[in-house]
Structure formats: C-alpha cells, structure tokens
Image (cartoon, rainbow, N blue to C red; front, side):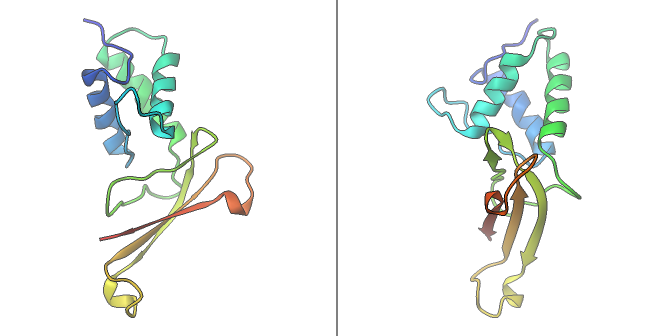
Length: 137
C-alpha cells in the first residue's frame, strides 16, 4: 500500500514526528494554513521525493535528509522545553552548542534553570546572523 506525500496526511505526519524525535526537531504543524519555516521545509522535502511510495523507502529518504540538514557540531540540543530549531533562508541552522545554567548557580539572575542554545547559518555567514534561543524550566 502506498503512502501519501502530503504533510497534512496523518500517517505521513506521524512518520515525520517519529523521525524528528531522534534529531531533537519539532516538525511544526500539519495544518495546511500554517506556513512556517519548519512546515515549508517538510512540504518541500516531501515534494522532492521521487522514490517508491512505501513507508520504508520514505523513512530512509527522510532520515537521510534530516541527518544531513539538521547539523550539530558535537551533540544535539537537549531542549528543556519544546524544540525550537531555527531556520535561516529556508535551511535549518547549525547547532553550535548549549550552555546550561542551573537556577542555583545564576546568583538570582534567573528564576529557573536556564539553557542557551547557539545556532549559526549553514554556509558563509556574518556574526549578526547567528541566533541564541533561551529556555527556562
């Protein structure tokens, strides 16, 4: 039986969610009216797929692209809230690293444990194109 190549298809979206979990990625929303960077990335990935329409083949294809496109220098982010992997010019940014500051070590600067997630664009970039995401728990 074939699989649908639409992001809004529940079976396809479920497969994407399962693969994204491995890479610390939030796949976004399957709502057709939602057109954020993540959603557009996955819609484009599905549109470019030209292999057999079965779950196993699509899984191999998606897994390959997620591993190639969501780059982390050492290890993947350990999000303390939901994953917020940023994009730049339609591509996932590269995860540079994470700085964790426990509430007890912050000398009162933070009300909870805090993590800073540092990303840079793929390819050549300027310093001001880097992004830091802050999460607290």
